[in-house]
Length: 445
Image (tube, rainbow, N blue to C red; front, side):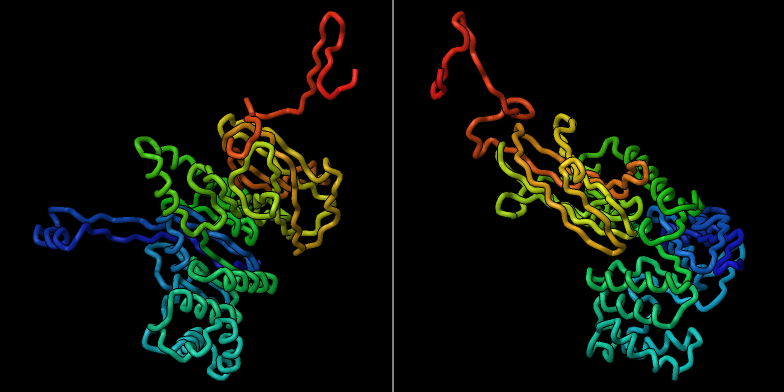
């Protein structure tokens, strides 16, 4: 099969200068003083993308992801190497890059289509779909300079997906959209994928890469570090990030580490906070998607059904888990686990099979909510809660799981009898003397 995108030995070099005065000093010294230096954003990248492939390109900031997409799209020319793209390519870079700020949204949409070689009459026929998808209303006829970043993002995406591209290139195109638009855009990306469009996109969201992509590529310092299945590449990326964080952590305060992590991963909707340590009471959509289903969220509720982050020992807790099945699944098993944050021990776990409440057959696209309600006779401290979904027909392997999804705290406040130790177990006490069992108040002899 002829590749839709082919790169052979592609490299891109930039010349970096510290500042204007340094550049002037280098010129006046007739090249004897070297203050600027060469920087290779990409080095010897070889890549073949088959038609219909959805390729997720991941890597840390500065890895060369945007440069790679810019070269594939023809925005940049490589310093070395060859690039070949077959079919009509549309690309979205950032927040509507390439739009003329003085033109209206309608004029920019028309201009984008003409640049792609689409006839004017054909673009006019597609305007209704573009306008409906962008949801800009009367702003469609206002200059782009009056748009917010989210509006520019919506218009750019609406144009790109409605010109029937053979190859669609997205560079963090959804980062500025609201949640409703993101859902609609992602659904359209699924439709394009099913129709055979080749999709290349940069994302920091490992969940998006593993759910949506058929293949993945990891860039590091301008080189291809690894490529293959999304799960394998995402695991390699997480290992690389974890190792880097360990190396940086020496000499840094906890606050510095937290801020550094949050800045680096600010676009990641499914990434835990630094060190994977949640704050007390936080319920989150942090999840790992292995295949077939997804844990959408995990909530902690009190007896009245209200979100809770603190409970007295002996109080009732509900762990609510929301699931979505990407594939039809038979008799999956949902389990939850409580761990003591201080002791690092698993103090309680159960699942739907153990409790005699089977989930049964679930269809692709189906969503389910499961509540686990129980008393928590635990000692004071913080406890982490996680959930996992297993497939008994696949050696019980996890279909989806979370990591430190939520935390609650057991307090002495409201506790009649303080708990000593990690857990208060129900017990009966009987006392024996020389005459046998000693009588207790309220108990017949």
